[in-house]
Length: 72
Image (cartoon, rainbow, N blue to C red; front, top):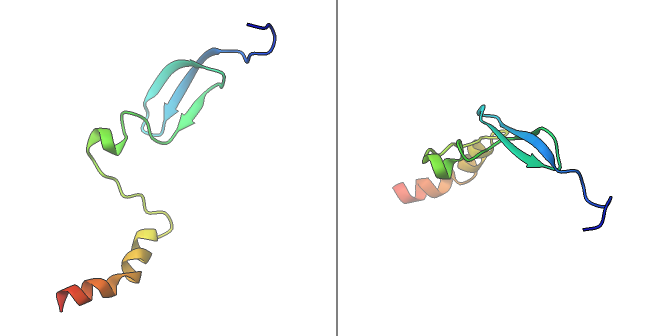
């Protein structure tokens, strides 16, 4: 390998919003993530609906007429 062209590979910590901390090596320092392997819905089996700015409500309001047609 050539000298001086590769980034420095050092120990770092990855911190998740859920509080999980993972020690690893990377070219970046102190990485913060929103979802990790401990809190991911696919692994935990718990589905979380993340409602950003009322998107779910807007969707339900927009397509409410379809539910009314099914009921009739």
